[in-house]
Length: 72
Image (cartoon, rainbow, N blue to C red; front, side, top):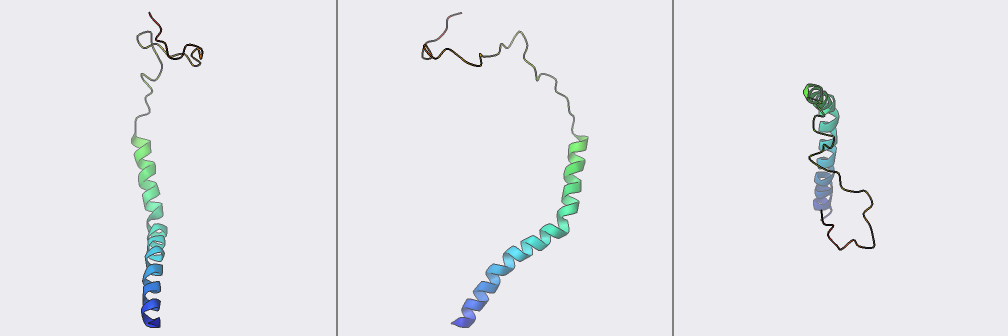
């Protein structure tokens, strides 16, 4: 019975250790790939600001009549 417990413990310990070793070994390459992907990504912010066609909702709507719809 002790042998089975030792084998089960070894298996349960080996999985996180193997994941950690793989992470340490492949980490620099993965970080370089992510860095390259973000460098080639366009950084355009076109359309990020509101225009006259899309009005901005009020930041603090009236609390007294919050359930009523404002007519235009």
